[in-house]
Amino acid sequence: MLIRVSDIIILSFSLYKEHFKLFARYLGLLFIPTAFVQLSGEIVRPLFINEAAAGALNALIGVGYLTLVVIAFIFGFWITLSMIKTCSDLYLKTPLKNIHDELGETKQYLWPAMLTAILSTLIFAVWFSPIIIKTGLDVVAFAQYLANAQHLLVFMICLIPAIYFGLWYMFATYHVVIQKEHSVLKAMRDAHQM
Image 1 (cartoon, rainbow, N blue to C red):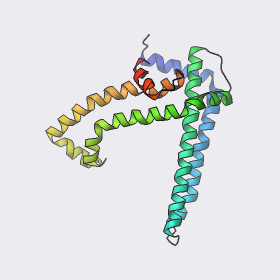
Image 2: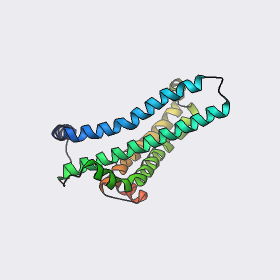
Image 3: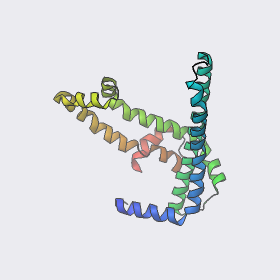
Image 4: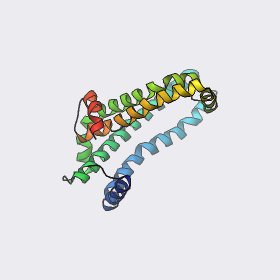
């Protein structure tokens, strides 16, 4: 059953309002990795500015910081998946679990969901890779590139399948969690049905 966008917004707002304490706890949990990355960045930044530090030490600090950022991203993604599952349970009126149990349940879908998100992004980006390589993500170079009529035509030809695949695979990550799908390819194949 299709519903209007305004109805989706109204239903979502009423769901968040009705379960404000639950979602506030999820937002608090999501704040932890974000604050951790921000604070560790503030600690690491002065170490890079210090030119007296050896190159190997800078590399070690950079690798350590990157590792912390990746761990924080994975933790934040895991919390987001748990929140997606909780929203689904609320809409389907299934019994709610506490956050700890929901996190435990969604842990098994963390890697399939992450692989699905990466693969969906790569499929979307492949269509624009010739343009990205040509312009280097520079806005001025991109505008100059599109000033040529042939380039504009190529961009439009790339844009239509990119929008199609973007919409098709937009819900692939949600499909992994909500439908409890372990197969990345099956989730991507079935995602358009959501």
